[in-house]
Image (tube, rainbow, N blue to C red; front, side, top):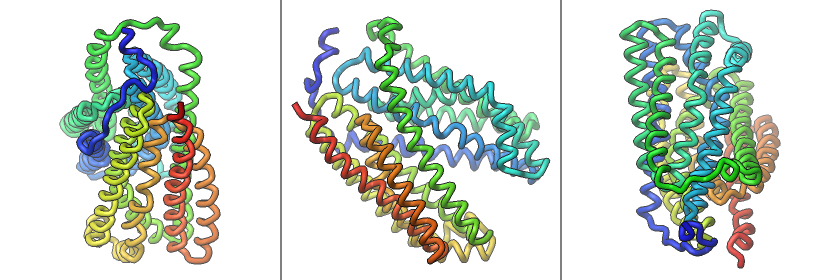
Length: 447
């Protein structure tokens, strides 16, 4: 027991390319399953030939994402704190971090279930859809939110496994959950004829089963770890630290979402075809970003482990290797999108005017992944190191510059100005975080 609670700096380790890829590749694949699952849900509902059902599914999914996505801090915050405990060999603290995250996830999920009627009403008001679409959306949201506790607990489970470096297990659980989701949605939605309600219930069932599977694996592992009192596990200082870290990550997520919403809003002022073209191009950009998130996850685990172990060589190598792989992949992705972007656009829209406009702005979207790679990787570094204050402050500065650039450049250069402002936003986030990292490293490993 005493050996597992060694002092900081007693567990140096070496970071290798194999370690980086062992985390990044499974996590990138896990993240990519989400948009693929959306395509399956759309195909299932589309078999009924009812436009209102498709509209209800699309708008309901947007509302659900707006409500659930900010709680991603339950995954990333847990990853950083578990990785730090893992780095210093404090196995009981790894266990305690998970139980704290589980408590937050369960409470937050239950609150969402209770508020689901209100969330559905607000969502319908905000989307301002026709009555048939609003009715389908109402059904979807109310059912989907039943799974909120399980969904948030799954965030915490994934965060724990990733913090331990078990990305392959995290990928397995994601594939298992999404495979069950597809199976349940087909049976309930098509075979039983439940339509959009069947798709929603299919997701609820798969989230619950995945939670049970993950908890079964985890409880089995926890039996080998010495028990800790509830007073120690949920002590005020530790809970305050987790809340502070998660609050800053939440702020960062909300600000980032707000920036993309504002970009979309300003594009809408330039006409329907521009709005649609930008939506298509943003799908291209986000697809590339899913791959980069895998290397950000690798940075979270390896940097957190290095900070916990007080091993500066491991920290420096983790930053260098994850950055090198992320830049190489983003450069390759940008070239592929630039070269074959017209085909991608043609596959996503058949409207001639939208397709032509999207092609004209394709270079902006193709190289947005390259502009955003440093911000993505640095976010992983700061989450792993739990340097949340700097992450929050740099995001605030970047958003202020982005808003100023968006309105000024948009008026002067139209849609080109909007895309230029987005690139400035992405670059500034990365550069400001890199500068802040250099200052923090001087004190993080001192002494």
